Length: 182
Image 1 (cartoon, rainbow, N blue to C red):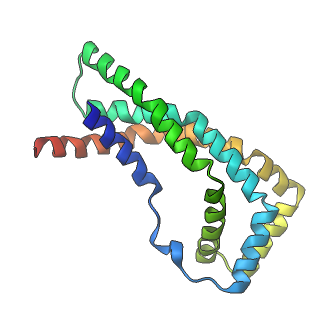
Image 2 (cartoon, helix red, strand yellow):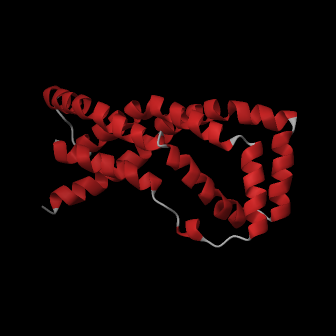
């Protein structure tokens, strides 16, 4: 059971893998425009709030993913499922706390800010980034900034409800192949 739990936690980590474009070179003009945009968007505060919202749902995400992976397409008896749930409950606080330490590290937001310039440069021109900054400076843009953490939390809840069962089904198939090959 512990092995299956570890596999499920590892599968969650794949969701946070770095994209290949993360280290693309960006012009100084784009870097300045993105920094201005991030300031207008109150990026640091928004990121902290969003991560706080994420941490509120993290135990449920870990629990659902790990339990579905532990089942791995098998029909567990009520006793086995209770054992798995009991084991999960022992590890979820530790896993949540460890993830919490990562997302509350002050260096994280600084590093994320640095990664934003290549991200925006990939999809926008400097002029478009300046236009986004103008939008975020408007009353509607500021409203968007203020409600983004809640939107993110609600979106994560939707993802958990809609996406997680589908991704867990894929993970279960992979786990079955791993177990079958042993």
